[in-house]
Image (cartoon, rainbow, N blue to C red; front, side):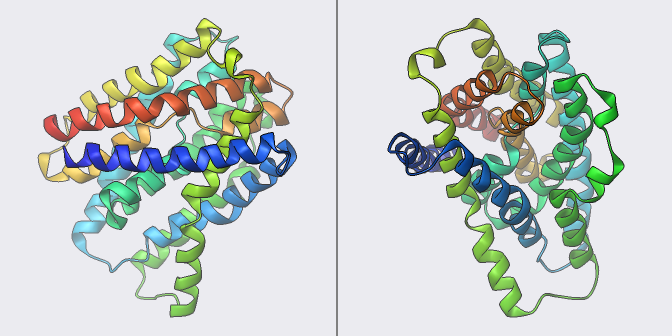
Length: 304
């Protein structure tokens, strides 16, 4: 019950941040282009700092074991999400396949995990975020565009999320540590992740007429798959892992239960797809997750 209360409280805080973004856009204090710039700051600076910070922990055999388990659980969960999205949507519905398969684990999952389960849990969710980004920039890119030629090893080599994940693993495994000043800088930047991400989503919300947000069956279906079907399937999957990994399992489930990832809108804008449809699915599922996430985690905390 405690985790449900914490999630509800943090969801309300995030809703406030989202309304700030909505207000800024409506008052023309932030443009759609400005929110894209903030999104790039999140992708290239803030999220990598949050991932790197999670690995600034003392090495232990238990943490190393947990790292391997979290990586396996994250991989299985993401493959399950992709399969569910492929069954639910046709090849022509690339935006919905992408949106349902890939959650907003980085922008929403990391802050929620940090606020409800603590810094230790962020250590485990980072595996999910790293794998999510690899799959988005490979399978996801082909899904949303239909163009296999866009897959590039170079894109992965310079992906900031993947680089920060590898740097964090190296810092965790090797007997070295960052200077205190550098660690403080990383921690301060990482703390910006939740507020900035929700402000950007608020700007997205401001671009969509509220009446149109609740129209169209495909928006509801995408939200249903992303917020209910995939979390329930992930919960069933996590039953195979021992009870001693309770916190780790809740961490993966939070990431898997997050709403449609905002990257679907970024990709849609970049590659000439239906940008407004993707924005509707991101914002609609984000609003609904205020209800669904505490519900899913409340059940999971009791049964896992």
